[in-house]
Image (tube, rainbow, N blue to C red; front, side):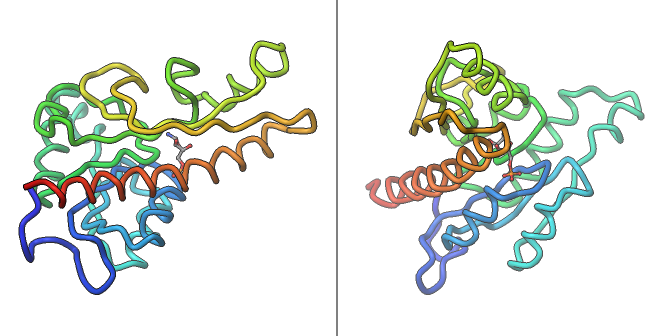
Amino acid sequence: MTEAGGSASGPGVPAGRLVVLVSGSGSNLQALLDAGLPVVAVVSNRRQAYALERAAAHDVATEVVSLKSFTDTGRTRRDFDAHVADVVAAHRPDYVVLAGWMHLLSSAFLDRFPDRVVNLHPALPGSFPGAHALQDAFDAYREGRITETGVMVHLVPDEGVDNGPVLATVTVPIEPGDSLESLTERVHAAEHRLLVATVRGLLDELLARP
Ligand code: GRF
């Protein structure tokens, strides 16, 4: 999919095109930008997302999509997902990165980007899916059920929540003195490193393909 001359590449920027989907603060987006990875557009389903400001500060194109504008006019979630796919496809991504994107995408989106949608989740494979993974892991630690948690980056083939072929994981030990806040901070730092390394690896692989 990478086209010669058609990427965000410049001196020191790896070739390729990333579209990043966000809903919130965008600290993971920031990590991708700071690492010089070729983010060509950022799409948010929340107009107030701070991630949009981070993108604009790096002169990256931004788009806002609104589920409500679809449901208010009698259209379905699948219609919305197809619209998001159109918005994303217009930027010709090699990979679509879900970095704090808080909307479950249906096949109306996913089938448009097979093997090209990458999700980041603050838990290890098979544990603590959903939006409260960090709280759930911390509770499990306090109940003596786990001693460590972690982060994973995985492909999103279907509508399973935080589930799909695993690209990379890293464990994060939980310390006796940890609060939810200190654990959250450590997990987020691990996320930033793992996401950058994994996406960089995917782009390198793409370039190495004959
Ligand atoms: C991250 O923990 C991500 O794994 C989860 O939502 C959080 C987003 O953080 N899905 P940010 O917006 O990148 O700061």
